[in-house]
Image (cartoon, rainbow, N blue to C red; front, side, top):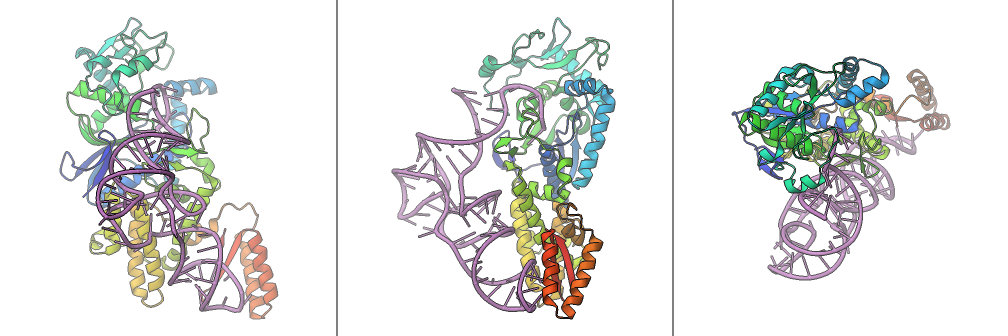
Amino acid sequence: MLKIYNTLTRNKVIFTPIEEGKIRLYVCGMTVYDYCHIGHARVLVSFDVIVRFLRSQGWEVEYVRNITDVDDKIINRANESGEDSATLSQRFIDAMHEDEALLNIQSPNQEPRATDHMDNIIAMVTTLINKGYAYVADNNDVYYRVSRFEDYGQLSGKNTEELLSGARVDIRELKEDPRDFTLWKSCKEQEVSWQSPWGRGRPGWHIECSAMTKSCLGASFDIHGGGPDLPFPHHENEIAQSEAANGCKFVNYWMHAGAVRVDGEKMSKSLGNFFTIRDVFKKYHPEVIRYLIISSHYRSHINYSEDNLIEAKSGLERFYQTLKHYTDVEPCDISLMVGSTFYGKFVEAMNDDFNTRVALAVMYDMVKAINTAAKKDAEDARGLMGELKAMAGILGILQSDPILFLQGGDTNEEGLSSGRIEALIAERIQAKVDKHYARADEIREELYQKGVLLEDSHEGTSWRRK
RNA sequence: GGCGCGGUGGCAGAGUGGUUAUGCAGCGGACUGCAACUCCGUGUACGCCGGUUCGAUUCCGACCCGCGCCUCCA
């Protein structure tokens, strides 16, 4: 039984799909004017895990994640760099796809772009005007008439009256009411713009998602997700637009990821304290970031720090130390795991609002069980390993070659090539054969100082980077 | 100011009205030439103060502290 925390009702509830067995999910993706930062990674990874898990349980998931590629920030960036705005956004879309691939994120079923939905956007704005939910101002901007929409504030818990006093009023805007927001922004001929019934212009932020959700998933769908800063105003405004235009309930369940913090503050563009994913990749294996994100619940905040990355890496090493003995074991078929106690606990945790941390705890218990079983019942151990790999697949972790992961370490900064390491190991083995233990220890210590750990076993000596 | 979230053992991080989370680190032991890996053992943790209760970290109330949204941000 799947339970999901719904931002709209602020509680955890049993999930009921609109259509039996199917889940239609829309997640707000990137506005592409820069590289992905860890906050983006969190949303990407969280929903990737959610979708993988749901599918593993037999749900048919239609997963849509949009790209917002019309936006003032994109245009400003393009102006700064002298680049065409379409070229710039394409460049960052490509970069995002590269980052996603490294994070082992599966593509959504649909990845619509705002610029491909201009007709739908204009049609929806027209509907809103016709229904009296929007109006054309003297400067040809189109605004949403917030006072017309009674349920405004339902998602964010805002009191409409209070919003009135706090709302920002831009001098160029000719709003009836400070709370009203832009649906269509008129602009000059030479700027990035599209022809509309109200003259040339471009869509305001929010309307593109209303248009794309309707086009890709229909007027009503199951789950809408996004980052922690989206409930207000973005999602609130989407509700106002979609429900007014379509005349029906927009979304049943709203899901929002928690914030990524740095030194106790939210990582954000405006604070300038963000780290891009590709920067972190320079020093850490992508799976370390994925693990860091999964190792806490998707709704709680996580702290981004060097210490936490190191800890995430150590946690993965625990798995890989065991995994390396079973590289030939294939992941179990999930349909064959229904009777497994471990798998039962894993599913129970994941069905409870996607509690990945508890799911990981189950997997650690399995590691211990496997290592213990290995001493007396090798087949039993292999069977458990097959299950463990299947669970890892659902979380999208432990997908690397164990030896390569363990030998990857931080970097090659020490300048020790694997060839050089192997040579020293060979020398040490000879020293051991000759019972020259002092020399053997000297070599091990030398390697240790350079970040390389040696591990002797019956099969020989293996090494890994700290 | 309005709305909301959170304060758990050295750190990270789940959870629960009375029973071991889990991981990292530490300590003791086994294994090892020595180590590492692994295994076994090891921690009177639940912000503060009241209340409800046979019993509260877990429920209720007050307080202190931190954070988020209210403006572009995932």
